[in-house]
Image 1 (cartoon, rainbow, N blue to C red):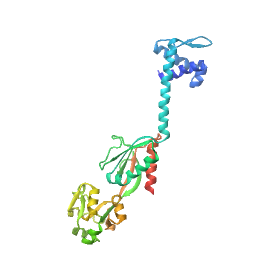
Image 2: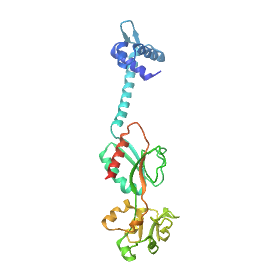
Image 3: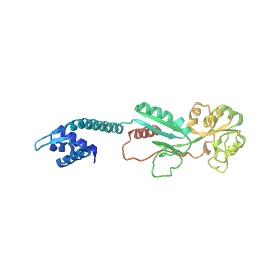
Image 4: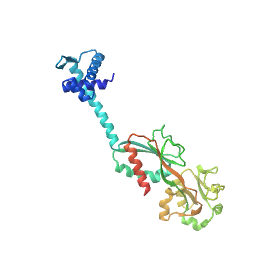
Length: 293
């Protein structure tokens, strides 16, 4: 038995005065309205309506049940209206994951702008270099570096993740400006600990050589390496987004531009859905628009 449908038919009969008028209101035949009422009465074990050939009236049980039906149907309408509101405008919690450095330098400031534009949205921004599970961990979208291996996702390209080699002007005055990767043997290369074992400082045209073995400072944080480079400790190879402000201000000076590693692909990834998702759609459009600038 479709209880809600039966309730709707019962309320319609009471409010419109006849089975025929109720049938028109709920868009079924008058015979079907009669069946709905009969199903309710059988299920409840009481008579709700006293009927004759010309009219029907409520029993005492029917009056009590009518109030409950109206309350239930009103709650259903409110629930449907709240969902319709979610479909109409961006609101609710949006969970996003991104790599630490890119997320801190690029995404976090853009999220602040997005929140100002969409005051009914709340963002949970997870910055992690691990490969999060979009489905299992219930993220709305993730920023992925490298190639996207599954066609089941929507992957929107972002500007590639480029690297930069820099040093403080004082260091370069002291040690000289390298013109070729081979000269890095005579320099102090600041290295991320994640690059040990042949994963870092592999430059364009020289993929077989890893100059991180010549490092006198290893650190597990890119910003820590940046601060050491600013203090004149040596050359740093880090994402361009992390070093952009220091380069623009002259605090760091780029070197070996012709030998930088190839930029890595970067994508905004989310699951396809035919239903409208205003909060996700608005974030995707906002991010792609800002990144295109």
